[in-house]
View 1 (cartoon, rainbow, N blue to C red):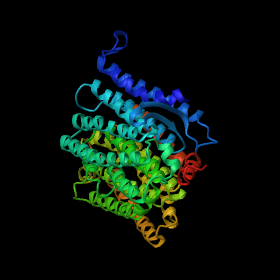
View 2: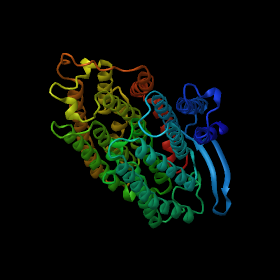
View 3: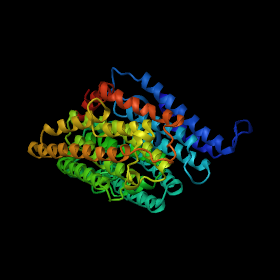
Length: 517
């Protein structure tokens, strides 16, 4: 298990380096481009298989215990260690990352985005996977920062080189926002490590802030929180997200929404909550306030984009929906209760599955119609996917109702638990304030349902296919292969939430109690 987790983290990096080498003559297939794309599918498939084996070998009777640990001295002068491990909080995120990256590699093998040679594309995809997996596996603050930053360069190039219209400004906006946030976060991480005398996240979590004064905790939470909030993204630090999603290639949008946004909220749970609880309690009401503003703002922005005549882009609308959905995650974290934090972690996974599927579907619609503009798609009679590509239309409707939180699907449980957590926040937090936040969040669920149903009506419904117009291609074989796991897991998590909650709850209880099981 120890070797397996290390292999999961390092394997994509080795694969990225191998992707840049010439393909052996016997493995080239029809062309070197096909060989390198096949290499990407193989490496990500092996990493996914290893992640599944890790999940099966995980001791599910002790999900609060850090397992598969590696602890090697890296920089003795600073007591920085290569410390890896996984528990019930990080394991689902590791599996989700491995799954989405594999599905993106598989999709790209058949539908490579327009741009330069696939060699660099596959190498960047694998480097992105390495950085993301490392973020969820490392247990040292400085190593966490290194992993957190590793993903920025590959995502920048994926947007700038393989994106659509406006890709370069969007890529620059993405990297400038996240780099500026990361600089502030690094100062906070250094402050915690130097004041506490260690950068080890387990030792700091067990100490539970007792070695840090209130003023140090407040400054640390503010600095670290800003960096994490940019990546989440939290309103009003979200403005890089819609441009990045709109310009990114389909697989870039899937990974950005499904995996990269989770790094910010994971940092709040793994670092801020256990290491600086008193500082977090000072900022929790403000975090909750920003969260519910983001919920309503994201929903209203989506309603504006969905309105006829607004020239709204389907990918941009899904990007703004992420601002609202991640608002529920931040609200759950801000309650500082097991119910709220469990809801936040569940909503993280659900958002990765559902929004990843939505971006896949938006990319498919754009491929078929040549545009993602909602007014163009609706046209005089509507895109009418139900009649022209019924399987594609059905999947889009399924993903929409899952995203709006229909009971029985994955999107329901996380948002409900986050609202329940706000109903009874942790001791020391103002219950009237959090009841207000809960009510505003509840309004956000209604607005979410409104804009998603408008999108389904405009894109999926409409008049019959005009005479002489070519029939749209319905779901292709490779699309079916890439999307089916996301559909199945969305249903599984919705009908059997204990699959996730059984992992996260003991770990969250231990986290919030200062390392006591």
